[in-house]
Length: 136
Image (tube, rainbow, N blue to C red):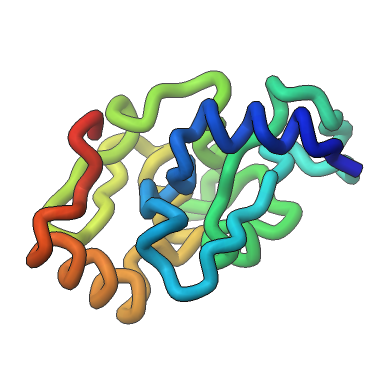
């Protein structure tokens, strides 16, 4: 179980954004983001802050217990928000998240980061000049 102090630390560190798809929790209808285990317990992950990130429900549910995914039959690890920088693995192409590395590409696919609903939301936020985040 994640305590309130640790949850607050994760939320503050992420600045209220999903650390995978970068959507802000104030930009979605159901703004309860999850404190997500980057490496799930079943794979030896801990409840320490170095293994926790903020994830929107869509990213968290799509990720599930996965730690890797396949590209052309080869296994590649998913993006690790505590150990890797977002901009080194992803870029924006309009409203789409594009993986610029194998890690990024497999993460985009496994987390279904460019689903129709997600693209629609990002386009709407872009029209309002509220997306993408300036730090990306």
